[in-house]
Structures are given as structure tokens and as C-alpha cells.
Length: 127
Image (cartoon, rainbow, N blue to C red):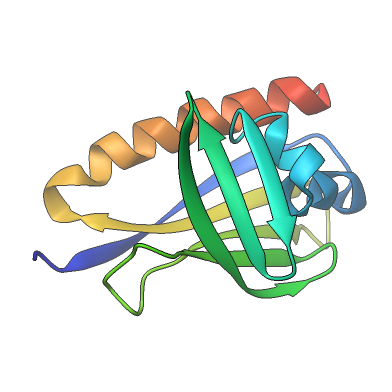
């Protein structure tokens, strides 16, 4: 198996960190933009797309700041995906930092998928 490489993306979001965090951390919020449906029980999350289910575990979180998940089927122990909310101290602009992992030849495709997903998020929150 090829080694996965970390990549980061930044998106400017016109929303408060508190509002944005709800879309990143709750099943109802994630269902509005990330997957067709999302269920959670404890630290376990189930994501549904077109009838297919993928499960992930909540690795860590800090309210209104970040949330990190790890796909349960992921073989790379160090791989995860994370949403981090960053507020600029001078301008108060809010950015969403996405961190994910992909094999080198799949990074561009993964970035395009994230751009599409985050556009859905921005639309859902009216940003």
C-alpha cells in the first residue's frame, strides 16, 4: 500500500465559529453538506452516501475550534481528517482549515472533492 500524504486546504467562511462548528460536529449539521445522512453513537459516526455506509471515529475535538475523525477502515494509523476553525485576530475573518490524507496520485482528486463538499457547506450556511 502506498504511503498517504497529509494535505491542507483553507476556505474563508462568513459565519461565526459557533455556527460553523455545529455544521462540522453534529449529525444534523454534517447531513446538510457532508453526507446524505449521518448518525452518531458516542464516538462512532456513520456516514451514508447513495446507500453506502462509511464509519469513522471521533479522535478529538475542542468546541468551536476543531474536530478530528479517523475512518474505521483506514489502514494508515496516522491518517485522519480534521476541520479546524481559525479566526484572524486583526480582521475577525473566519477560515475553515481542512486536513486530510491521500496517496500522492490521488491528492488532486481529493482536493477537488473537498472543494465541492465545502461549497455545499458554504451554501448550507448561506456564506
